[in-house]
Length: 282
Image (cartoon, rainbow, N blue to C red):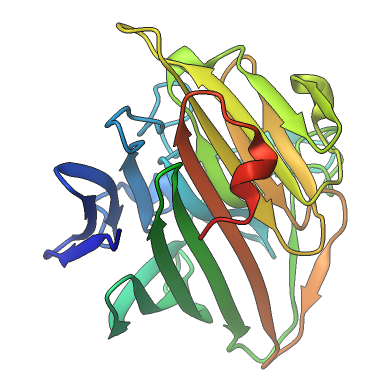
């Protein structure tokens, strides 16, 4: 089945049959403190069950699935406070914006988007080309996400995480998903192993999260994949969250004019299928 894509003033809608599978909000209305950036919410399974959470009260800058980086030199493109070595979290005037510029290519099942990263002070640090693709099968549907971003300043910019600043097991940053409240305590699995929060920081080609829904008690599975077997930021408690984290515990310096590329996929299924069966979809 080929999904149907519709672009409105502020969002891209992805539908299959009579189900809205995803809404990609490319012109958000967020406060500056939340580092405005495009995000996916709601995300639904083929049966229509919602598998994302928007603006939870504990972290209002969490938005479904979004490309979010907390430590970009001295700037924060994640939202909220910034973790500083020896000082902890502080709210600073450094919450940047990832701004949609245009959709340059719109295909039957994919789009290519141009964006820019602008600091809270109005400085343009990166340009980005983002490709989003969508595929639907009988078993699941898949979101493909590729980002290519280029340092357009005349100085190197260091990408890191709270862990590279000294906070243990807080290596978040990248394509970050926040799951529904009812997914708290869900099952996490990687090749050959299943568990929960103890899989924080594991290196694996894919990671799956199984959660259950309130009201009807059905379950859903999300399988995240990334190139180069990254370390994974994952939580099952106190809330459900997954992020393939390329800067988990290692800083990456982006030189002037240099482009960094990251490719990911998210496979979303009803029930409790074998995650391995979903990895090759899309």
